[in-house]
Image (cartoon, rainbow, N blue to C red; front, side, top):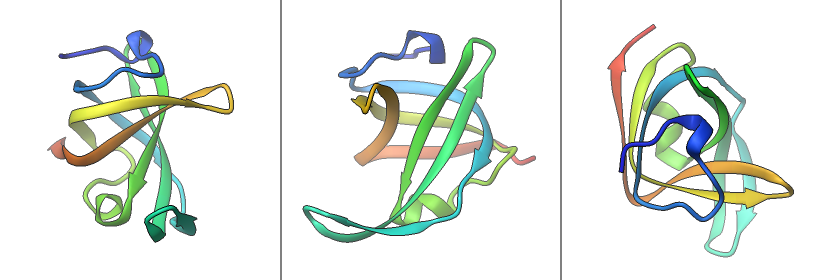
Length: 99
């Protein structure tokens, strides 16, 4: 289902989101229940607003700040009162336009 950023709520699944990466943070190593992982936090924006996007492992290298991207099969969770978007193992990131 195609959604705009302002429509995203925690618990939503199977979303398709198109937007521009406003910024991509520095990757950090964190411990997860699946073992150590690399995470970079990004800000994804469209004409309706912005949302936090978690990029995991190899996803970090797929797109850079300023790129217009489309996320497929993304899901949203609320963590500490903040809605975050993630792309699971069955999701995809595609770059539509490089900055």
